[in-house]
Length: 236
Ligand code: ADE
Image 1 (cartoon, rainbow, N blue to C red):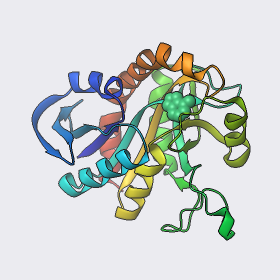
Image 2 (image 1 turned 90 degrees about the vertical axis):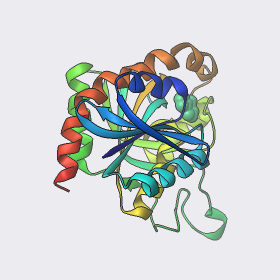
Image 3 (image 1 turned 180 degrees about the vertical axis):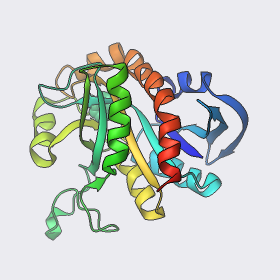
Image 4 (image 1 turned 120 degrees about the horizontal axis):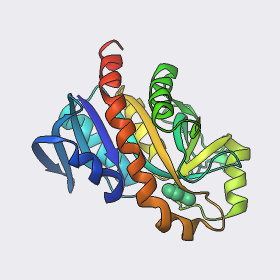
């Protein structure tokens, strides 16, 4: 079984339309939709915005379903001149930019529970998703570090800092948290984001304008990727 999580309704509504639902369970106030999508057994959940919501949802999903992999999908702020609204970003690794024990001598982003800053996605999973994305949206696909924090980034200076500190190409509010839970539980994970804004001074205007259109871009690509991802996970 593959688990798919999105934070907002626009990020999961189209996926649910493509799923033959066979049942559901509700726990921690989150509805887990069970069914078949593109011939693959899946569970889909909308977790709500932010790191705690994503952690609760991921842990509950793992507890209830023991998925072979959890995929987080949705929108993100693009970072840098090469990442545009409407582009797709596949995470090569996740970092929690607001995890900060630097006053104690640790580097910013250091997750003491895992003794890591960057939580990597296996290269073959990154390539699988990026190749599927490229087949649908040629020339608009980017692989790179995604920075997660409990903060909607709408500030040029902060956005540049995420690029400088972590080499981030996108920012969002859940992926790094999901990745930490998966690492702690020994479950595979990946993150796919479509760009709704640029995390800059214009982000608060761009986000509501483009979030729905961008979020829906993930659907076609996920439907193409799911059978391949399921096969890859069988051989992990
Ligand atoms: N998700 C979409 N755009 C974002 C931004 N600018 N900051 C954080 N999360 C986002």
